[in-house]
Length: 381
Picture (cartoon, rainbow, N blue to C red):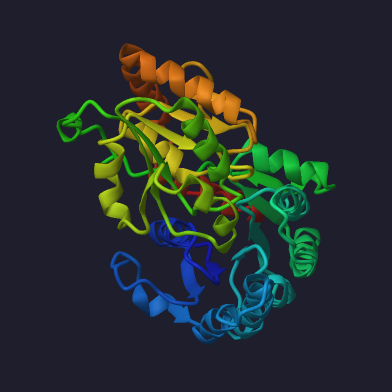
């Protein structure tokens, strides 16, 4: 039986990879900073926590200087990687998240293991260019420490046997920066169909409610959604943000004070209720490797509006709309179409729900394990 070690300094979608390995009888070890005690379906005996790097990173972020977040990533991720090496002691596959794995990956390769790097966002150079441009638009300085971060990202691509990406968007950015296509593997993220489903009884008002879920930040393109909503000035409408505020949001949020309702945190299992009180879901990101919230919203029967740089796939004009990045006019136009046509909202929402049904986490689990076996050249039984 194939054996895999999975390593991640943060939760991300790591728990889903671990479940895939455990269900297939492949899990040897799971290395993580803080293990979520609510993940009761994962064998705790196979978990190794490395908490100090995360605590150190949190401490660095409290230091009041402009690049503290990026500096904390540099220190935290490298320290986690170095400490994780002691738990890499052989097996068939070492699956690690990007920037957390260069040193532990080298140990795995010395032990004869195949190595897989998870890359969930655009290639770091592309991501850097997008954010650097956006920061300049708002008169903000974008830290050069970020470039130190993606030097390690890129070296992991060079040394890994395979690189897993969640979308065609991420795939294209990787190829554009010289990553060999024969190293890339596409594994489509999923959602829980039992949890995310329509509950029409929860929408008890006629308010046209526009919902965004994610970090309120320049990268997520929230500034363009705010501008679009402001220009429309629609009667009986509401814009709702769910998610924490990133520090760079101070550059644009004050000018839109009073235009939106903000909920800093909602437990993931409660999001279904919010989706079902909304009229449309919008994710206007400048770059988003996938955006799992898109499929959760679609599964609840919402039409979705995303940008061309959001990896989650929908059918433009059928399940919702795809618009260019940094385009408040396009966002306003599509919102107005849906505002004026309730029948179209229902039809697009039903179409979106139907489209995402194959993309469950169970399907994701099967893809993950198949890639393990294929990479090792072992026939799966």
